[in-house]
Image (cartoon, rainbow, N blue to C red):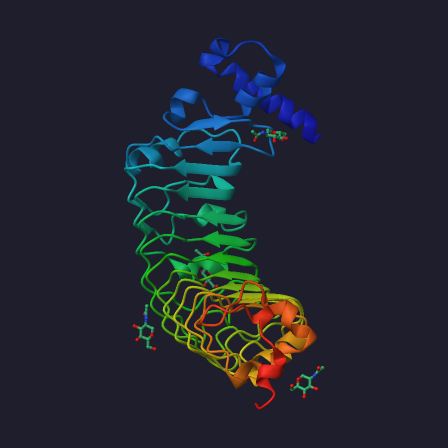
Length: 347
Ligand SMILES: *[C@@H]1O[C@H](CO)[C@@H](O)[C@H](O)[C@H]1NC(C)=O
Ligand SMILES: *[C@@H]1O[C@H](CO)[C@@H](O)[C@H](O)[C@H]1NC(C)=O
Ligand SMILES: *[C@@H]1O[C@H](CO)[C@@H](O)[C@H](O)[C@H]1NC(C)=O
Ligand SMILES: *[C@@H]1O[C@H](CO)[C@@H](O)[C@H](O)[C@H]1NC(C)=O
Ligand SMILES: *[C@@H]1O[C@H](CO)[C@@H](O)[C@H](O)[C@H]1NC(C)=O
């Protein structure tokens, strides 16, 4: 029944396609073009590869918001698209409410352009279909975060490399990957992720963070990776990032961290704590030993380690292999791996 219905609609669309002959007689092409709107109705957008489950629309060449809205008010034989691409467009500064009409997308990529804002009803037609929302590399200052909970299947969202200067509390039952890196956020509140129970990977590098508020990354039962490198952190407090008893990794390189508190990363088993290129002078046993015992790898190279009695505990343990000992040097240039435990006998 369904097949018949599709064939009938294909035939119907072919019949009303004036530009048909210019597309050749190949059967594959026939089916593809028949599922797309007429090319001239959606120009300068291009509809392609339209097996019914992989309809794609590229609108990279639209000249303004009005033209984009015009395209989506054309006749669309099939309204459920797999992907929308608007790449490196230098004209669209906003996605206005209703701009996509009732055409929906599973993957939305509006990237590398000059977008500044997204209307709260711009993406409504994709609430039940969107899995990927990619808005990276734009100039977004204004994003309707409060509609996240309306996307029932959203798993990945990128707003990386934009101009967002705050991140409100997020609510999404489905969101797993959040890319918010490279925005001048300055801070992230303790409740930001409380409403994202499925979150697994959080990209918060290069967001000018000054501090991690204990509990911000707690009670997230799928959390596996938190990227915090290239921020302005100076201290890592107790309960900074808490993992649900599985491998977890936290990336803290290229900050200005002078101290890491004991119990900073509860729940880590295996995985990595990257702390290279910071301002650590010591590697206290109470901070690092419990992690090393759980099989966590640490990368303390590029820190001004004084290599005093604070590291005596580490030298003749089997754990030293977990800290990049040939790469990690004391402030005076000596490799940790080559220090003589006997020199620390008086500690
Ligand atoms: C076109 O559709 C086919 C079948 O759905 C899919 O296998 C293929 O990857 C698609 N090609 C492109 C370029 O998207
Ligand atoms: C979005 O979800 C909220 C509740 O989470 C609901 O109140 C609101 O009506 C929804 N908005 C739309 C446009 O469906
Ligand atoms: C985590 O959840 C437990 C139990 O619901 C609660 O007691 C605790 O305060 C929460 N921790 C944080 C940091 O929110
Ligand atoms: C790092 O922090 C120290 C104080 O703890 C400060 O003197 C220094 O300027 C900071 N460096 C950078 C690059 O922010
Ligand atoms: C490690 O060194 C300390 C101090 O030199 C010594 O007391 C301890 O027995 C050594 N442990 C091992 C496993 O060699």
